Amino acid sequence: MRVGRAQAAVESAGLDALYVTAPANVMYLTGREAGRVLLTKNRGFLWVRELYRGVYADLYGLKGYPLEVRTYSRDELSKQVESLGCRSIGIEDVSVSYCNRMRKSFGCRLKPTEIVEQQRAVKSGHEIRALRRSASIAVKGMKKAYEVVRKGVRELDAAAEIEYEIRMGGSETPPFQHGMLLSSGPRAADVHAHATGARIGDGLVIADLGARFQGYYSDMTRTIAAGRLRKTERELMESVRRLEVEAVDYIKPGMTGAEVHDFIESRIKAAGFSFHHSAGHGIGLEVHERPKLGPESDDVLAEGMVFTVEPGIYIPKKMGVRFEDMVLLTKKGCRQLTG
Image (cartoon, rainbow, N blue to C red):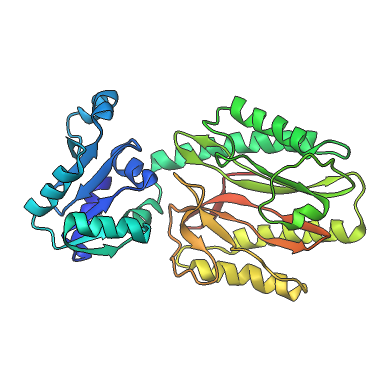
């Protein structure tokens, strides 16, 4: 079904074929991350190393498997493209050097496209169930964060306990593969700060974490109070939390990602601050995918999309506050998956 929809999109785009190499896109189309996919409007090929033809033989040998599985060889792949008479091939967002190699190998026009990424933006029932499970594991990790994030504890020690909880809860990888984000005090103004050996003092701590279940990621953030808070810190934390709730309630199908971003940014600016990152992002086989909820996003939000909503305020050398939740967009609005 996924392959069929992608093939229909290839034809609608006026392309002769689509060449897919990004692991998440290959996983989406084939069930495994291995190999390269070549799709025309009526044929589909999966090129894999000989090893993986054996390792995944049970999958590739299923009756009705939608792709012709071949042993990968650059020369054989090029010959296949030539035999199909391809003059225009859609490709993903790749490096200039790789694009040049493909152009030389295929000998035809290459056109950047996001056919698979756009298809992935709307989740199936199976994907939503996997995302729900991934989100539930993340929630357990955040509960642990509220237990271990306290004054006097080293950031690294807190992160280790939280990540242990997430892995024991069933996550296939550490949060985001490279580990969770955790920062306290003035370092919380760094949007993507990882834990250090510093000890947590009085103030705000940002914990940004997630899990991975059946290949599907989750992502959530909380700002946690450690020790005693100043009045300004408490007020800022409460206002950002309220803004996140308002934004989740505001979102409806048919809006663009830019509209959501503008809603959040306008309220942060009205409070006298600047907004330093996008309002959210799609999540699935990758932590960041379509739809984009940024200032220039023309992605139209549709029923079945899963994405994050994450307002934040950051004051350099003083503090940072962010709250983030995953939501599933339904015909009536957003249904929260974390929290």
